[in-house]
Length: 151
Image (cartoon, rainbow, N blue to C red; front, side):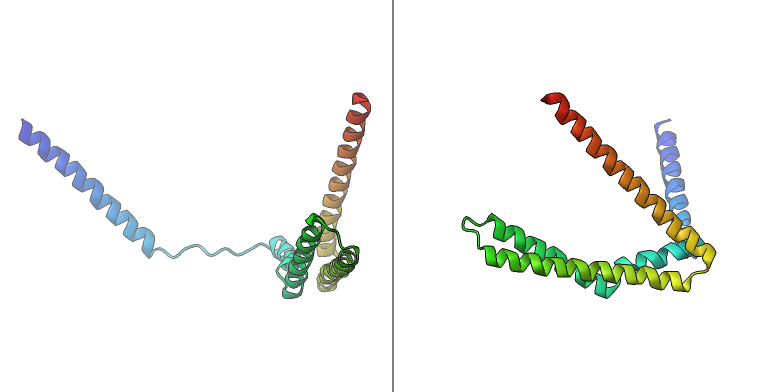
């Protein structure tokens, strides 16, 4: 009886191992499905390309570095107003360049789009912008209300 039980367990184990090997072989031989974005997804990819454009990446990195430099200067025990003013000036110029590059990319996408595509893409961005503004306004109102209640 003991020997039959061992053979049964061995047979089941081998069956599972063979099944696993067959399934893994079939899965590795199968051609993976390639993702083909739908036209709306392609349009949004064009918009998001702005955040991967080399000029925009460079401007973003420069902007972050200037902000770090500003906060390092502000953290020093002795504040050098001239240095801080220079960093702030460079930071404002960097921010201007960044905004200009992103907005010019949006204009380029609009020029390449049909009116329907433009309505879909930029209409969505407009709705998102409005939701964010509304959320910020509501948050500001809540903060004012809480401050008024505590006083």
